[in-house]
Amino acid sequence: MKTLIKCLAATLALGAPYAAADADYPKRPVAMVIPYGPGGATDISACTIAEPLGNAVGGTLVMVNKTGAGGATGSVSVQNAKPDGYTMLFARVGSHSVSPAMKATLPYTLDDFRFVGVYEINPLACAVQADSDIKSIDDLITAVNAGGVTYSSSGVGSFPHISGAMILKEFGVEKPLEAVTHIPLKGGGAAATAVLNGTATFICTNSSALAGYVANGQMRPLLVTTAEPVTGFDAPTSADLDKPALAQLVGWTGIAGPDDLPDDIAAKWGDWLATATANEEFVEKMEARGSVIRLMDPAESKEFIEGQYETFRKLVDELGMRIEG
Image (cartoon, rainbow, N blue to C red; front, side, top):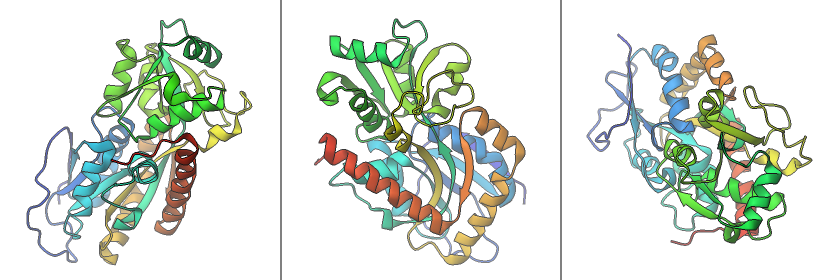
């Protein structure tokens, strides 16, 4: 079967009737839902793995950006899809660790999905426009205390939303949600653009979403949350800054289907992910963006995601960030 991969911003009808899965799966295109907009960390990861994953699958993968509600819209479309393997999800830390922790009325739980594997870990970086007067995290805190600072994110209840607040708190801002103005946007690409055009003062998001802007001199990184340096980011680490708590701010990407995805299909996806993540070109591209490629099996993925959820749930309680609506 010829492999065809499409990475595009589009809307796909996900409710069409599907034939039951069989030994010849996949017989037709598989919708790979990206629950965030073009240009963000999830989109970058999905589009980069598309070719090696499509080659492993040996069929047609259609990458579909289905945005809204901090990743919930796309996630729900997969939650409600027929569990035949023809609608799969690029799940993310925001949609499956942060949102469940922050949103009291989220229309799904972690138990509504079957993860076939987490394959990417992202350090988090904070950055400002390259020509900004803010040249360090200390400068940023000084600006915050003076007033008028804004920060952008991919939406209310997103990973960058909670991360920005936590980082300010770690650096002594007592009421970060009052000290700065949060600008929620539709996707990581739009959030980064807000910093580039001066709408937002700073952004704290996955390094992979900022690497290109840092490399071409459009953004200045202020810190990375890992204890180790991140390739391409000339900025202090959490260890350099003596802020070990920041190391818990890490993103991830995985692939999931509905909770009742059959065992045989889940097993195939596990094999395909193993093949795709062993592709040297894919690994080189992702590592150049500051990502760490690490494939977790379903059991390890579940444990990791649930641990992240508990971490963020505690943060939400501490910062008073729970969203009731």
